[in-house]
Image (tube, rainbow, N blue to C red):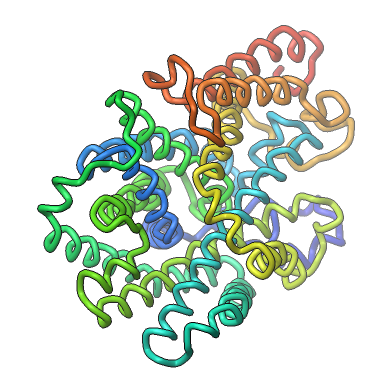
Length: 470
């Protein structure tokens, strides 16, 4: 770090609040600390909405099997794509794209990261506000008519809490995770209550929108699992860069970040099948009365804060890559990261609820090709040889400059991958084309993107000595 310009020294004093590679002694998250942080981030109310969408097509046991399989596939893809570079050098997900997209082209995945995290955080914090409002109504603190004012006010409160927690950087993420991880066990208890009291109804339930093709239904459950876990790509690097090596991070990634989503999504699957509602706060009142409903409301509100904290932290680290924001104070950077969420929560809170299925599909459309490109480049084209100096050096002298800072191979591959996904599955209508029901949409999108990337790299970039492949 002695070569770092003087103006960066103040930023580097708090290493976890900037995007520069972390030194070995700064990467002090062991398996348990990382695992708890990942579990807390993964276990949020999006699990119930994910479960709801699976429950539209599959019954309880088949829905869980499909979602679990898809989640493990999606988590493995993300781990293989962003994990190696992030763990080797202590960098975030955006830094890991510079060898593939170029010294300026990384702005494409950076934009995808910001849009994805803003979308998820908006969903979570609006859900937090709605649950808190219902809780206040349930205990008689406010009346029904006050909810129109309370919801936006509570969004602001939640954003304020996230902001204050993250003033401490990654230690704030760690501290809130140790407290909020308890909600995972409360989720297990809620699932037990529903299943034990409504097992007969659950086994007899028929999915509302099931296709006449059982294969299509199962594949769609797997696809929902894959795209749900692909959404962890923007978060992963900022979290695992704190771990010292891959051996420390491998199990926490797959178990801590991959498993909670399908497990807690069972709550949503069961709720939508039996009671036609995935929100546990609503059906817990039906099953167990007001007391159970209040417990569920507290759980739902708390569950979202941990994920929102992780998302805003990852978003802020990603913003550090923009030269204009590189030396900005951490406080101002946090405000920039959380500002769009405040705007969405105040002015268009219902937008993300009404279009959640479309939002999920667009994540697959965008992040599946991105992961296919990274996997192809790192394992097959570069043979795991990456220059950290090239990642953090800009200008034409950088090995990852390609053409004007952009890698045409990555851009063409993204277009091909997105086109493949769009052909196989329409993200808006969920209409599909053969062979979607046998291969999903995300996996072919990743494969086609990887193949196009390899072809252009071998035919264009390598012969012209672009991209430091030699």
